[in-house]
Length: 406
Image (cartoon, rainbow, N blue to C red; front, side, top):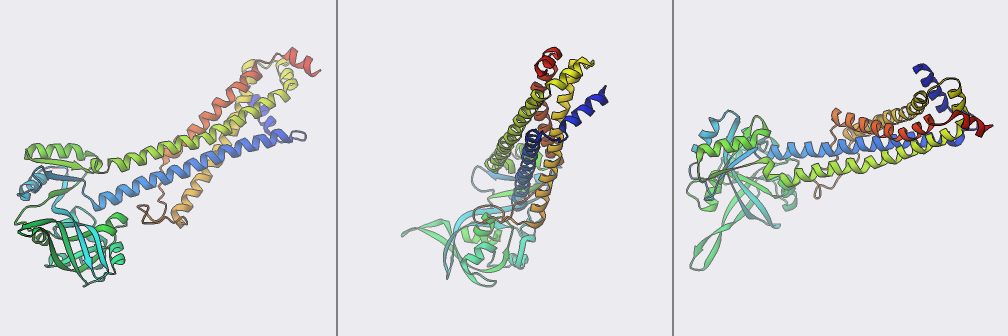
């Protein structure tokens, strides 16, 4: 009997003379599902790409875990690094100093983030040393040299060897009042991390130069660490601070970027729900198409029932029609969505302003699980939408149908 139900369902879907309206409606329903599924796959791939790209960039230029002190500075960073080295999940650790300041050149002034690093250890924790596009990272080991971001260098007209002046917000008290500290440096390297905020506002120098600039004799702002498993950052931070005791505390990458990643996750869910409405609208078209088909096929349904077809068989015939339409639309939409995603990934034909977004092109990442969830959701929606017209067809009384048509 299953073969009979499939045969009749396919026969009803086949375009025939005099059924132009139904064929057009069926085509529109399939196209609607295909567009909805395709748009959903492409948008989710872009949103996933954004999430992954930002995570890679942020975790590349920032540490997975940072240990700080409630007193403002860590006077004995070696102790912190020793404890970190004894923790099995920590790959590497490096001290750093960070402060706000002003970069002064002949072109003008620019507010910047001044970050003191250990040139020998920084490459084990972040990608900053490998992001150098001009000059040499080793220049930071020399006294009086800094590395600036590519965007900052372009904005301020800086080239290798150019003199710059750094002014810090931490000043010294004199009889004249509070006087900011400043130091003269030369550009030893230019880096390009691909993150606009870093490339436009970050200035790197050695920890020794940072201490001289701030007037510190010793100490650092904190110790940054790279972990084997980034998702264990919270528990590793608790373990290290428990061993160190007061006044130390830890901040992990999820806490430091919580708002950004929460917003991305919310946008992804919101876009999924909004674009699912396209599939739901197409499903309503399937309901109307099958309802019209039931009205048109009353006589044939009556004949099938008179020949011995049960209510369940008639119901399954129309369910099969809806499933076939939904499956075809889902397959076409999946191909469309994957095609658009692959084109965006390969050719990058949509450009984004770097001063507004973190990236210059749309990043794309296709996750098979997301594609399967979207396809399954589309099939479930179309299946549910066919239940009502299929049950109406199954409940049709053959006597009434034949008398009406007669």
